[in-house]
Image 1 (tube, helix red, strand yellow):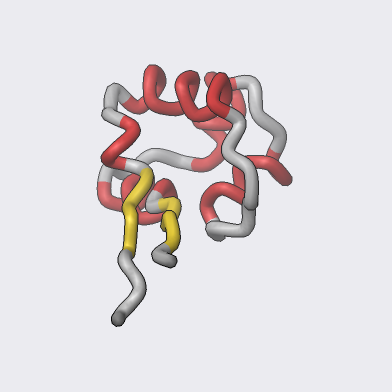
Image 2 (spheres, helix red, strand yellow):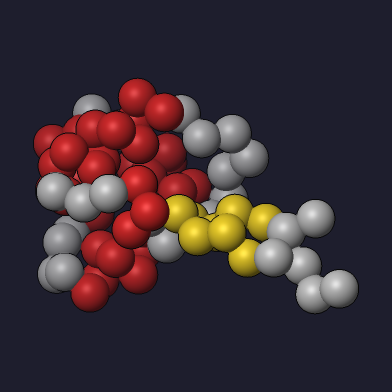
Length: 71
């Protein structure tokens, strides 16, 4: 089984977006955002992900990546 990697931190850094601006504009807590940025969540909150995508002007596929397991 492969895994889903959250690439929000890489996207944020590549586009020069501060964590504070995401927190302020997307209604997420610092703890919640850090969990997303550090790929430490096990259940994605779809409304939160939608707000982040809306704010960043990106697609879900810009923030999530499927990595297949080596067979």
